[in-house]
Image 1 (cartoon, rainbow, N blue to C red):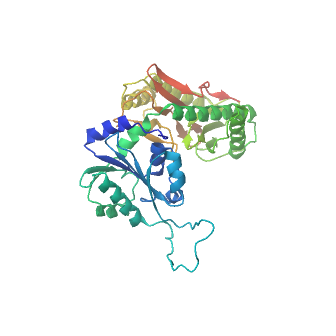
Image 2 (cartoon, rainbow, N blue to C red):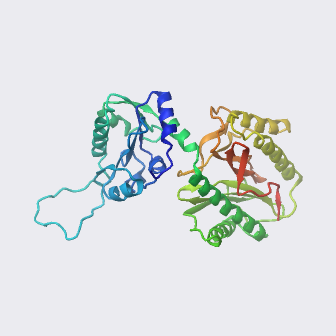
Length: 398
């Protein structure tokens, strides 16, 4: 079946939580599980535009509910035989058009009919003998305004957000390939940008140079250009404001990513135009030493809170005891945001596993001096960290 869902692992996680099934509602989760686009109605990011039912019995087939515009293509893309559809706002018809005198006169919904979608979900659960069972639902996605309507289905709804996050955190070969390519394109863009920066250039100009070079790298390899790209490039200032024109001594933060089939890379480097101030060099060196401390722990079996502790302690021991970064990195994958669970944070309960892809970083944004960042995208392997799109981490002198 297309998609990246590990049914065996999903079954084990459901068994641990006493769940009979998962109901996926978040568009990214549905595409992850099925390899198919859940339909234009999912752009509203409300519950009910699409569902996928994943039984705990890994031998039982999946079932899907999507808008009627995409039902046929969804079935073809996903290979799911049981695809049911509800009407959305888009009007379509086969040619020749049916008898115009036929008194249908049934306007479509302005978006989609949430209750019709729920009725279809109830039918699926009933036919799979899942009513009155404990069923997982992505409550981290379902809006509070939508959730009360789920009570019309007689099951014990349980939040399965963390289960889905744990499933999506382990990447398969194809996902790793997309993330690696995205990171390599972004790296090529950084290399080209740092060769092109000169005094008088602002952050907007830098962004265009980086993006053009990143996309050109994909073309050079004979690959399709990324779907999109994002960049947080800042010149001096506070590390978030774009800033510019660049002047000698300015710190330039380059935090960028390319997106391939929804999978976003995330990496960053810091440059300086000319000679940095003594304070800027001292801060960067401290961040690099802290990075090295944390990076050395990126191995299977290590709790992420231990990585956080080592990284933050390294900063504190160098005299920066007010440095309180909330996390030093996060999972990357397919989302509307480049940051996904798990987070390298002080209270994290996650443990590093082979197949995880994370962005590990030590940033600091200092108003009046500029933004600093050292960030690598890392695949966790049995042998340790494998950096995707590697490049020197030292302060880049322009």
